[in-house]
Image (cartoon, rainbow, N blue to C red):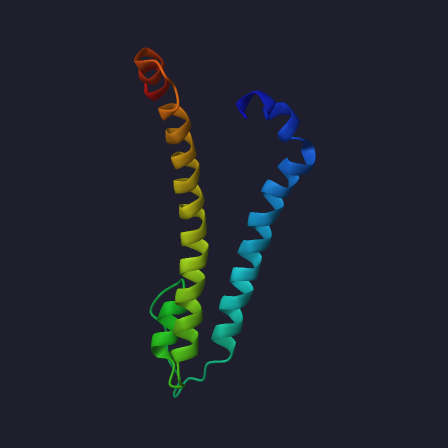
Length: 112
């Protein structure tokens, strides 16, 4: 409903569009921190990088990392797959509404 944009995009919705990704990123960071804290390491290890990613830390751990790997892959699929599916759904709705236009000239204008 493009003509209802000003009604739909009120300050509350704009605030939610900012707040939800912010909370999701905080929860993802908290999850990664918890996953690293529950790992045990065998010896004193020196990490030759300035930035330690979760994947690198899991490779250095001596404890069982199956659960950490599963949680990491699940979070990646969730945080990457859900937005991608939303984008695909949005584009499919756009294409289906353009296909509903009866005139060829109207379709050409919409697709261009």
